[in-house]
Amino acid sequence: MSIITIERKVLQKNDEVARRNRALFFSHGTFAINLVSSPGSGKTSILERTLQQLKGELKVAVIEGDIQTDLDARRIASLGAPVVQIVTNGSCHLEAKLVEDALSNLDLAQVQLLIIENVGNLVCPANYDLGEAVKVVVASTTEGDDKPLKYPAMFRNATVLMINKIDLLPYVDCNLEQLKKNALSINPGLTIFETSCVTKEGLEGWCAWLRSKMIFVGRS
Amino acid sequence: MHELALAQNIVETIHRAVPPETRKNVRVVRLQVGAMAGVVPDSLEFSFNALVAKTPLSRVRMEIESIPFVVECEACGQISGNDAGISRCLECGSGKTRIRSGTELQVVNLELEDFQEEAV
Image 1 (tube, helix red, strand yellow):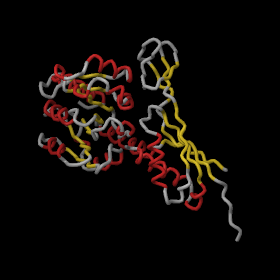
Image 2: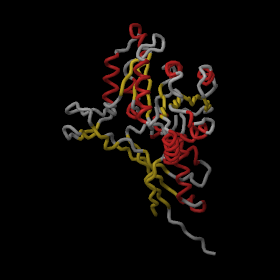
Image 3: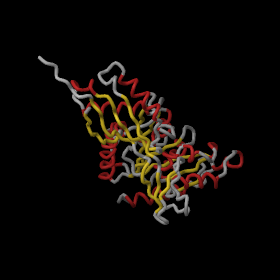
Image 4: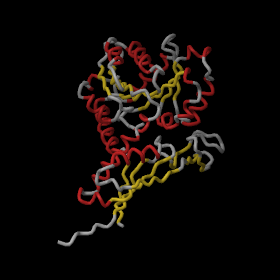
């Protein structure tokens, strides 16, 4: 028997493309976000509200990842933002290569903030670096307060947690403090925003955070 | 179910490391999979076996070493493991911790049956 040493990450190829994407974002001063959550937590609604709030202020573009349909891309396009739809045809996550291909349809010189809406899934996208600056995970109150404990990999890799649908707190079995405590036990460094896309509560804090990142990447 | 995509990456890694004429001699592919890598080892093995069936790699067995999730506290120095992926120090409660292991997902090595040149 002979041994061939490999010592290679299973996702090395993806990570290499992600590094290329990251270098491209950096060279254009584009702040890229990988927006992840389970299906139906409100990612697209958050995107719509964010675009409305930042309109005329920041140049925002969107990459939409979905298993099927371009329904989300149409919602975003109706708000006047440049949007590229990736249909994964059954695949449960976006990969760096799909994002790299999508980028050829965007003029990054005209993009300060790029939001990549991943496929709704709290498991698979956790493994795939897309080249983003930060992962933002959305957990809605209707999902209960134990999601961070059930999907620790996703919450560990995230920089920001958005707790969405807080307007529904009186009607659902979700303890907000417990949800935050659970999330912070998995990832003590999380920045947390509590939002509602219906009442618009908390969205200004989220947008202020985004604006502060524009300074970080060196553009006004 | 991204294990199929991961298994495809493992097959490609083997193809890159082993020339076509030697692939039928590969017997074992060894992996390290962290407890918090977000991967189900059984699904990964099932996917791999399905991909290599009826190919020169059909006799490759996947051996997975599970790596425990271990956190080191920068405040109190405690090194502790848990199965839940809790990063906060369970001893002093500090959030200033460093993950020492448990997120690995890598191909370590391949084992090949020694290649016998057929006499001409």
